[in-house]
Image 1 (spheres, rainbow, N blue to C red):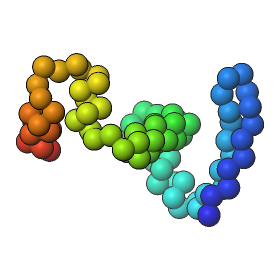
Image 2: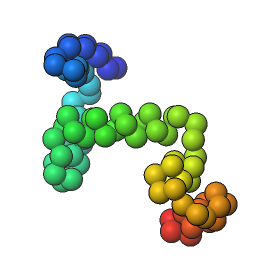
Image 3: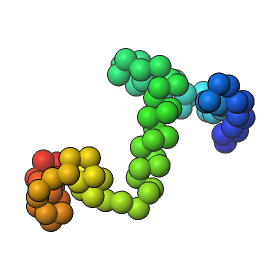
Length: 83
């Protein structure tokens, strides 16, 4: 079970989580292997969660970023081939 407490601080908020110790150890190990702090990794995980649940496909988000001249179908094919 996770408990979240939020504390406002200069435009951002601190959060405090109560989390299973084994999950935290694994998370910390991977974050360190990637050269990230736990805070950075949690922010990235939250961003990825929001993106994955926003309802847009990966290719439509890519199109927004690159303003491609390729069709959505062509972008999807390129993405699938690259997997």
